[in-house]
Length: 424
Image (tube, rainbow, N blue to C red):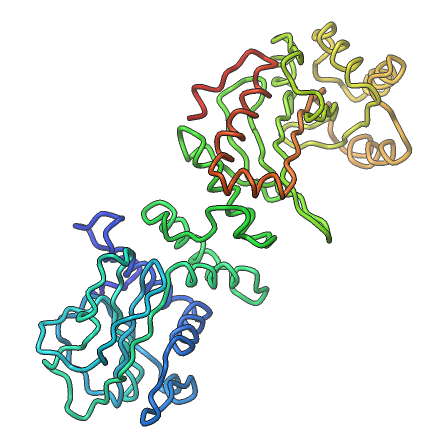
């Protein structure tokens, strides 16, 4: 069976083997036309054609379709032209010698054949120190005497390939399946070849939302004991799933406007009724927080089953915290006929406010529904804002991982949790 069949991976080679990377990328080129055309244009742009050689042109070479193969030993090549392509982890000037047929016994990492017009033979070297430039020379064996070998190779960088693939994710016309393939390829690279990822620091992301979120995801993965605890919420962002009864999600959320971006470390305690009971029973103490940097955010809302319905504003976080610590017995499910009196009591105690917008939303989502009850969720949020300049500076120094870890521990300290069972 063809090794580039999606369901036929290598069984005897571990994920970090360079052949697995070659196969993964060629599978992506096979199933994603956007990725393939981007690759072709990159090859063309990096090739210097001699004056006596035909230029590499999409029109000339793509009109008859193409075939992609991997790990072929001395295959028969009888196309009009042959181009040697090297993919590595850094920019390489290349060898001074011209590319010409060699007596060597060749096994090509990848081969792309464009009808009778062009054959690309691909050499993949994820570590540039392992490059042997004679490998760029095609074997004479089974090579037609009529095939013209381009005298210069195209030398590509993995980091540029990954940048281009990231840019494809922002294209609205790209299909969902193609996006999923690209994202799966990124996950494969992050796990097995992380040094190829060019977005290992915020300052390299240039304010691009896709890249910033990817950096956030990788940053969170680098600080937790178990990467499977990193999740994504479409309407929020990337977060750590915790084992704690008081707080189940710790978010590192990208925020952005027309002028700037920043990230918010968000610890929202008591997001559900049961979490709220557990949180206030922990007797939260804010004395260890840096009050100049942490924003305290009362997060009172009501929910039905697992769906949050309406949030209510609060004026005073100190009053709010003291009230719920002293009134844990008032955190329980309310029947519909009791909801109005319950909320009015909280308003009289200055715990929540009820403006017209909230009142209309509550009527629409709850009173006019068939819901017989609602859950009471007096959440309590801690928000630590990290401006882009601060994030970039910490990242350049290699200190951002530790900084985020320490801030999470600081936030958890209000309920006497150190996070050693969650964080590295």
